Length: 236
Image (cartoon, rainbow, N blue to C red; front, side, top):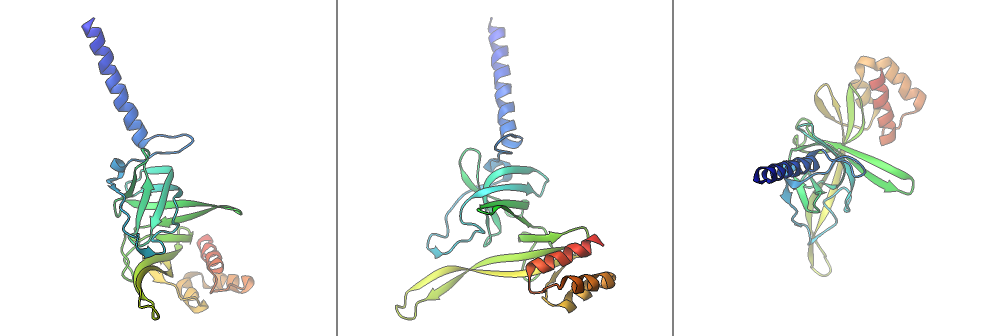
């Protein structure tokens, strides 16, 4: 009888461990893959921005996202937000804890913003070469891409001091700075929004590129126009 009970208890213990491991890494279904702080060497959330005007995040509220780690693991339907000051991902874990994923651990995150016009996906990636004081941990929004090149948007937030000239009151607020880059042949090129920059960049396909620019009256000041041009070049 004792042996029988011992066998049952051992099996139950093993089953509990297996379920816990499954819930940690491989849970699928309605809520997608769940994620725990322990999965990603995460740390507990700390609100360091309470006295600063504005937000450090792409969106201040949590939104559903798909996350790919640098080691290839993927999680879907995770409530997350992207910190553009620290370039970290803040998320709500499966057990309700709020935390951060360690720097450099997230390769890509796609955030789903639900609007009246429908769902809009914002995809950000890290791991690009150092450029303009930005390192491989910095996230870039992928506006358009392909096998030859990608059009990327750098969105960085900083904290600046402000002073009211009338009252003398001092405060801090988040300031956002944006720049466009092209990632091509393993290098980052800061975009100049003019024809000469792109014809020099795509010189190996100069004739069809010039024809596309003329036929489509590409506006080099427009992100939409640049996206179409980059996608055309990738199709050649």
